[in-house]
Image 1 (cartoon, rainbow, N blue to C red):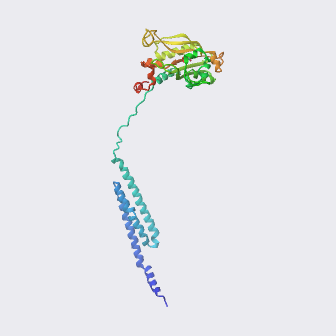
Image 2: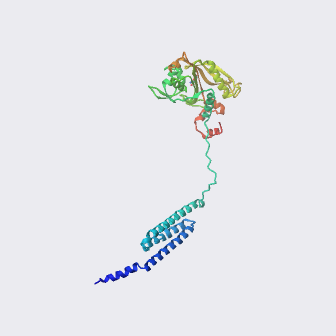
Image 3: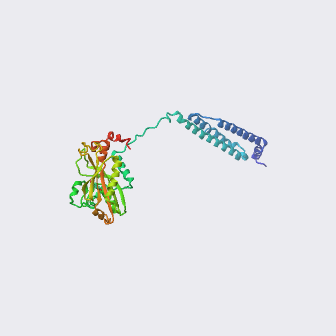
Amino acid sequence: MKPIWTGALQSSLSFFFSFDLLAYLCRLMEELLKQIKDYRAEIEAFNASDDKAVEEFRIKWLGTKGLVKNLMGEMKNVSHEKKKEFGQILNEFKQLTESKYEELKLLTSNFKPQTSNLDLTLPGDTIPVGSRHPISLMTNRIISIFQRLGFAVAEGPEIEDDWHNFTALNLPEHHPARDMQDTFYVQQNPDWLLRTHTSNIQIREMQKGKLPIRIICPGRVYRNETVSARSHCFFHQVEGLYIDENVSFADLKQTLYFFAKEMYGSDVKIRFRPSYFPFTEPSAEMDISCMLCKGVGCNVCKKTGWLEILGSGMVHPNVLSNCGIDPNKYTGFAFGMGIERPALLKYGINDIRLFSENDVRFLKQFTSAV
Ligand code: DAH
């Protein structure tokens, strides 16, 4: 005897494999494919002009209750053999929807700058141009003249030991000439001080032992002096040194003549006066004719018609030997000048303190100076 359920199973199985079912599934698949085709067309034609429309697009197609999810749900109704094919079509459709959404987001965000107040045609902010300090202008001018004669720039420390600032320059301890250059001591025994002149650079260069030497040494120097309109406890110098075989006083004169004419004009008159510096022998001070009164005599030149501009001389043999240079083989000349005095004269400034007060009203007057 057959069990009761066998007949029911037989009839449902026969329905399952009947043509009716197959036809139904085929129709369903066709409908779904047509539906997807229509959706594709709708999505491709869609445009959004603002964020709101993009968000509506997302909710309609990609939201949790959106049409893409709906179609996914139809997967279970698709016949076993067609599942793979339908799955692929569905995936492609999902990708199309997602990339359309990304594209819409990008487009609407690109629209944003057009609606903001940013005006790209406005002119930029001007950057204020600074000015060179008159001391730098003067220093650069002096350097450029000597550079044309083959002098190279050398620099050295402002805090110096006693030996480089005094002793090596033939100014031993207790030498009376030290009194003229009293300075500020950073430390005593051993002595470290603020250099009184840029001559320490000469010593440091000579110690290197590379000859010939032809250098120009700009820098700041210090003296223990009362600050007034005429003098300060710090100022600037440019020093020169030339050492080689057969360097003579004639070379010194010729070099400084050239400098004076380039600096103060070709009609300037020059004179040398014998002088004394412990580090040079013979020594001379160089004067130029006063450019304000043309040598007639005025308050600036103290009615003499002459202005003292630098000290100079032949390097003392003791200085050469202190630095390990043979004075029987080599000779040389040196010179040194302050920068503040020529700058006062050139720019018509009557108080040396203006150089270090950092008053912008003073400094900006040199904006266009070269
Ligand atoms: N060092 C000197 C000073 O400060 C200036 C000077 C004079 C420098 C003669 C030199 C020189 O090199 O030869 O007063």
